[in-house]
Length: 146
Image (tube, rainbow, N blue to C red; front, side):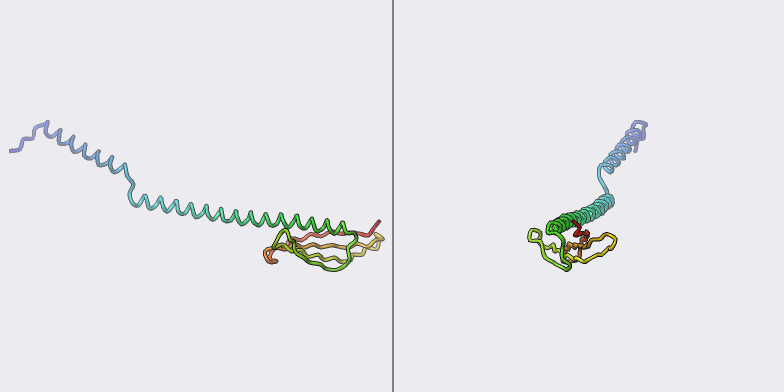
């Protein structure tokens, strides 16, 4: 015969509540497979975005470096032409030994303004790199006025 006294029922209920709390606490301690998969997917997407940004920054830094080099080389060529005096009309081209892959093209043509009473030469300097796909252009005017 079963004896259902108040103490037995109370202890059974307490035991059931204790088991339920233990089950909930064990469930709360771990992650489900779905939660882990979602976390890994979010981290993977974040890494892909960050790597794309880093790659884009490296490309921009390289372009900026090459443009700075081209600017400096163009200034150097203009300075050389000005030191040589009044330039002759024509075209010249060459490479920079100290910067492989960079080439220069100089085009000098006359520009006559009668009101000035002097001859002017327009000097255009093109600096190219990346097999001629990138060009930096600069121009100046030099007169023979003394």
